[in-house]
Each structure stands twice: as structure tokens, then as C-alpha cells.
Length: 53
Image (cartoon, rainbow, N blue to C red):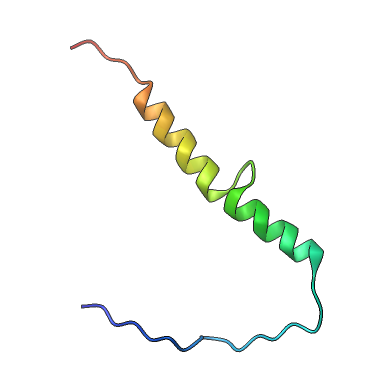
């Protein structure tokens, strides 16, 4: 059973933009070693695995 609430777990209001944190977050999501990049690498490695039969 699943339940969804729209409340935030933490109320975080930054004082000013933080470009260092933004760059780190962007790297995690879509950078060279980010989640999407690693997922696509595993996907294509699986497709390129050739076996007899």
C-alpha cells in the first residue's frame, strides 16, 4: 500500500544561490558518473553482450 503526501520533509530556504552545491548536484544527476549515465552504460553493455544461440 502506498500513500503520498505533498508536505516537505524539511523546510529549507537558502539565503543565497550556491553554485558549488549546484554543480555537485548536477554531476550526481547527469554528469559523467551520475545516475543516468551509469544506467545507460549498464543498459548498452547488456545489449552488446552476444552469446551463441
